[in-house]
Length: 462
Image 1: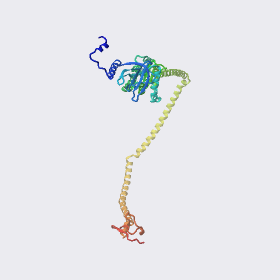
Image 2 (image 1 turned 180 degrees about the vertical axis):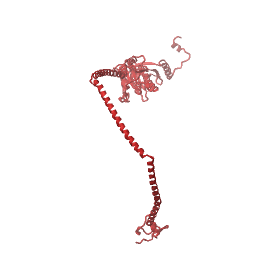
Image 3 (image 1 turned 90 degrees about the vertical axis):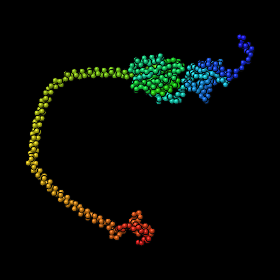
Image 4 (image 1 turned 120 degrees about the horizontal axis):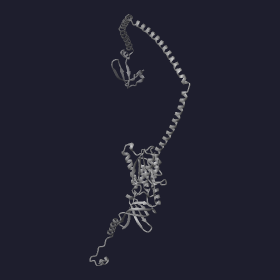
């Protein structure tokens, strides 16, 4: 039979029915295999952020509704916190929760749809990073005044790169450029932009100081809010703030404003304006040099004219007619002074010769012999006196020493002890001079000429 229903009625064996779990398992396997990746757009309702970190909500288009779950391992990468009423675009996969047989979307990517939703996401990210201090003015670094090498993180095929290179070629030919190509829009653009900034910093760490990138331009050309959204991602803002290279943000047109602009050290209204900022220092220096060169050329021309006029005036001055006569007069004067100098030198020379003859007479052998004999006689007399003094001086000293020792011996307390006297002391060495200083039973020491006596006071009388 062609009819399955009629064929089932005539089956010899009755088919075993499936359990609910088996049915849900088969449905789960078929659905998850058939809908491994789905894109759905709808409005969020019944949003709930669980304590576990997972998000649970529903998507509706007004006529139908489907449940969705975004687990903790995925939602930390989502740039905004969902809320009821937001229109979003979801990428994920269909799954069946077997215990209840419920169909749901397991969310892997979540993006806001429409200008209103993007504005909410922008404010959420801005507020979060602002609370962390990521936009503080104290973190902003000054740009180098004369950058030698500029890094550009943007799309290789975009208009932004062309505009930047055109301006730099026109205004700063000495600047070298390092291009770090990256996506600037789409789902993975933010991660690539952050990776490009990290690559530029890694380049600086791996090369010599003279070849390092001095400033980094991060940006792209204009576009819709969704096209520019990658530059609102938290990962890009953190990469900009974490860069060791100063960063200029140049995203879109002048009216466009992104989170990257807030995080960067400087915001440029357009990519071309960023290039103008980089080239400004060199252009200004060239203008100053040109202006200074013009001023110097004019000053030199004026100085030359003035010098030429002064030279002509001097050439016609009377001094040039009088100069030869003054030269002759000074020559005559010099000759006269030379003759006077020669006379003075001759006179001084004669005086020195006369003095030399007198000294030579005093130093003759006869005079020196007489002087030597006199000195020998005086020396002999001095030696005799010294010998006499050497013989008598020790004797006088010995006699004086003996007399002094006799006087000291007479005054010594030991001489008193020799005559039969004694010295009575306390054990601590204090000399007792009065019987009233002792009491019966006190121990004393009596010092004699030869030896000491230890005694005890039995009575004291005055």
